[in-house]
Image (cartoon, rainbow, N blue to C red; front, side, top):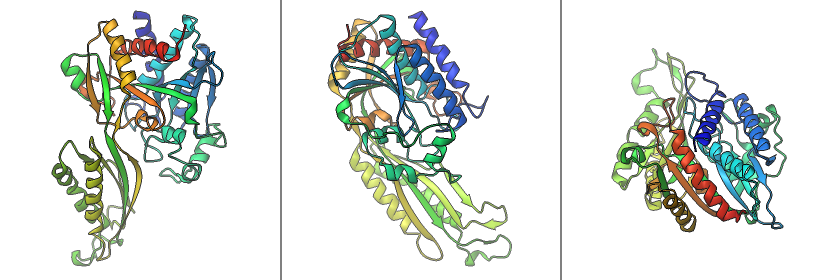
Length: 409
């Protein structure tokens, strides 16, 4: 276990160096120079561990250990390797490194699986560059089609295809994956909350993942001089947007049952100190463990935003992402629990308030997730930290479970 812990620490530290903001957390946007650096590192590890490596038309990375059964579906293990701006080193990479170490154990022990084992490193889970999030997994299962994918642009107007080509990726490669080729998907992730650490428990069994939607709202008004336009003659897009956003916490509280609403991104045009803003674009992230709460909150938010139309203000709303709450596979969770008991590892069941690639892939195959503790419950910030010893314990559970699911000998 000590050697495993050291390898995990070393790999997470290596991946953390691929950041656009050294000393200020991990900023690794999809199809960036830092993406390419991380991509090369992950592929080299896959080769080192005896895996056959390929990338798809989104840039998702797959490392495959062939099985002995002809045309059998694969057991996939992995997570994502992109980050939010100024994020941490563990959100995503912990799961990718754990998956690599499962493959390393197969390689080291010369195990021959009946069903193929695949390590997956997924792109754009966070949605930090192209919006919406979960892009790699949505593409794999067909929720993001070719036309939608090539129409996506970042805030600088660069398309996905242009960005891919800039780091040598091929957007013409196959994208959607036949669900029949996937037997199961396993994902390890940091908790991003305080429960496991507060309870002193190293392993969390994720029973369900919260439902979520993301809206992009555009508010248009009329630009004007800050000094010469009277207050009663203004169509200030930012004032209108600020009033909309200010009521979202109240809408969430009225819904109850853990409903949360967040505006995390807001852009202002023309963004001059002495110019009345004429265009605002902001995001609305709505989440709840109950689908009816998500749908009800979306309806209330849209109705509230649209009530501002008129008097020189015009609003438009685009739903970028919608994912209902997803339950994890009980049979695989039972395997996880069985392995924990064999290893004398305490665990507890919990739900995830964050979205994950596992929730998307659960549409097409059996899926299960493990959480490990996050120090002080912090995530999406430079202070994000998890103990490599906890990651190693979870990796052992994944390894034992993967042996069972692939029927490796």
